[in-house]
Image (cartoon, rainbow over all chains, first blue to last red):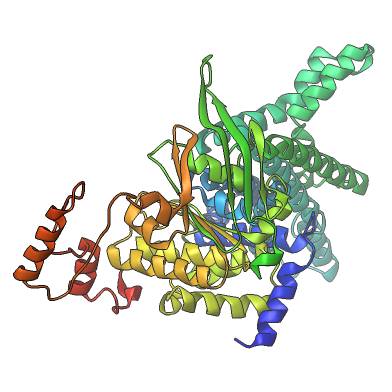
Length: 308
Length: 293
């Protein structure tokens, strides 16, 4: 180690403390991602593969419309399930564990503001969910691509005589319209956005929870209530009747504590062949951003005062 | 170097009270404690379990807030995150991320201290050499022994080139050879002018490395001062002779008995410590503890 090297290290260390440092946040995020990867969470891809291949094998005798729909239903269902589990269990597992194991001591006794720790953990989880969804999507789209070409070939074989080019084109159009299409990407994005909100819920809970189990249970309860939130609000405060300030206030508080997760369920429509307007995708992205901001802020308020 | 720096640690009238959930009583963990540590000093904080040592350290490190009083690190309030820039901390029984290797662990903490990629690489090698874990740099922490974990903990505490190192029970659960290595590292820090605060139950070790000692009991600092002064028995004098025969010893004894008011309290062969004997017999002084897993 030369004197020059020592000087350069000292200069880096003596540079002015930044209230927010993206490199510190990214260090925590990448460490969280590595932790989850080395916990072998990507083994779930095997389960996912079995599910979508199983969906193919089990429903061979259905019409091509049904077969493609089932494949997409199963794939999106599995993607939603895995993404939500990673978000909630991953967040619930990591932060309380850092506190229980006192690993947090060695992090927070470095010049790391508590807010950066929380944001880093959340980003790490979201990165894992994004990578998982990307891998699942590649697998899903590949199976769908192969299957739609397989179905086309089977359908042509079953046609009597020599089908005309026009007939083949029309058949291809019908099958491909229900197969691999750009609209599916919107479905994957919606699954990611919902998982991001679920992770943020778990983040808030983990800042005041005393254990991993408590965090998982409470987060799951909020997650499920979130799916019924809009229905309950419509029942108690029908759209036309929401006049009073108190009613609006209560509805607002309920919407913040229990986010409307049902709104993210656009995949059913996509699988049925409906198109999702871009305005809805922008709205969902904005809503996710709002919830991430609010929940991160609340987490910080609780965590900043937490006695470790 | 030390002369230009303000007091390394200044704790003034620190009180920490923990409320008990669902009960009216409160626990006073630290009671109006004041102490200061000079730059370059090795300060030992000793006391029985639950006496308030760890709570004092946690306040100093910003992990908990004081109920009243204040604490500063090199003149900066310890409630400010920036104050941690000059501090390195080794917690008691440290748990690091077991899925990381030794080198990755140092690199992770280096990033948190603001080091860039090239500097991290250099600092990682330097520290792994210092704590004699170069051979285990690519091994995951899950496979480290207690002593190795303690040393990697010390390495992460030093990654940001701290001016103050806080060690909470640095040798807890470590075998004598590993313990000696950690003691030697503390001595090296002292030589480099780094301020060290350590708490330990191993009083002999505290005695070996500390310049000053504070004794905490029931949250209060009951004694404080330079180690030499504290342990000195003022009305006794010790003479150690080499190759003295029984005749000479008898003469000395007779001479002492002639003086009024002077008593020969004890005479006999001085004893080595069990630790020294153990290290001598097991070759712990020279044997590399890298293989102590």
